[in-house]
Image (cartoon, rainbow, N blue to C red; front, side, top):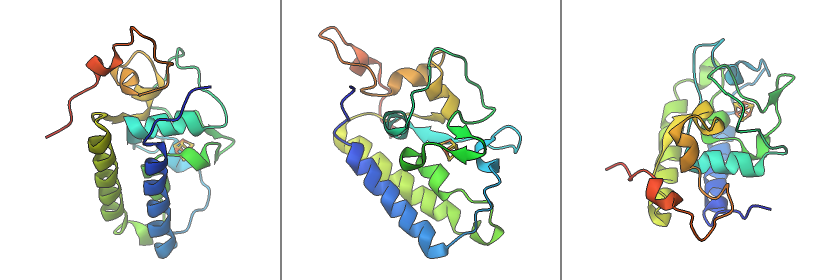
Length: 167
Ligand code: SF4
């Protein structure tokens, strides 16, 4: 079993903070599933490599990263519902269609990203921020920035391929 990274619970704490911010605004979700069908509705899900790790490690099933992914949608949406609710990324927690919530969303997501960057800085993980399919699909370099999804070996040189933190 793959070990959880040391910052795993810190990312979950940011998610708990975001959930609370959303709860205070009480936006309405009609379970349309639009938020997870990116191409159909003209948006995309961006996330950091920390969030990608938490998503993949915490999801109830493993995605086959050797298959090809694109920006159509999310493989964790099944029959219109998210099957990875506990480990879903920050944007999934904050994005709602409810028009009454649109003005509040940007400030919550910006603060959440700031908190995640702080975790990345504290743990020296570097920072990679890309569309979901870049982490799902091992054709993209972003896939290689996901820490601790592979068992480290004595010859593991993954640290040398991590991006430098943004200044
Ligand atoms: S992780 Fe869940 S909420 Fe986020 S895009 Fe995928 S199915 Fe939707």
